[in-house]
Image (cartoon, rainbow, N blue to C red; front, side, top):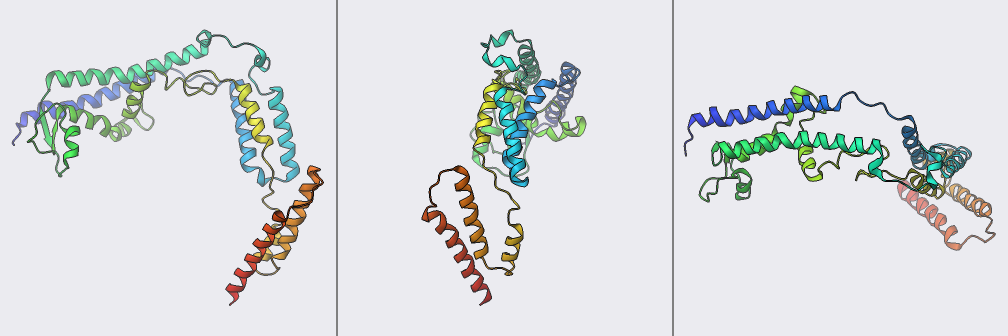
Length: 310
């Protein structure tokens, strides 16, 4: 099958140029709609940073001594329980009003809807333009063979069973440009541009809810109860036990290089278990399993060391 060169000059190349120009214009309009970036609210940032600090303490508490860990743990737990870091400390006992009456929430929703409309409207107009003027056109042939599974993707609008899969219709050429021009947009507009096809598809499915998220908003756009989040984080912190990462590091190093027997570590583990049991005030004797586990580990280490020497 031979194609008229006019199809290349008046259909193939114009569709690609129009999509590039529309993407650039959409990026500039989106930048104008966003306006000047808003300054972060100090109290909202304080809530977020307090949660991050608690998470860092739970994840990396092994790198600080035990007394420092418990001191930070007590301070953060008390602050979360009293609501010290809350944006409105006394708002936890008040009934929550209608979220649609919150100006910040409404403004965030409107910003998300405006951005999504700027993503949806241009693509809808271009698709309608291609369907009206170039419906049923075959534009280009791919220079490599494909399987039959790609026929529905590359030949939309051309219902023929005999045509080779490598031929591309006008509507399919639109979709190929929609997802294939991202590198061109990045080269022209830089990283983080507004002409992102994946964001367009997400905007069509969410219709304004996807971008309505902030530091105090859930993924669905609803305001979060930060006091409940703080209490839940406090419970997680209370359940976290400290394990000093550098405890007996000298002994472990000497045992690793064979300067001391592995039984030294076993004795230290027994002392630690007894100290923890005494601190809890249970008064119960250690179970045989608690003592046998370190013994088995030490015996396995000794056998492994003996095999290495042999």
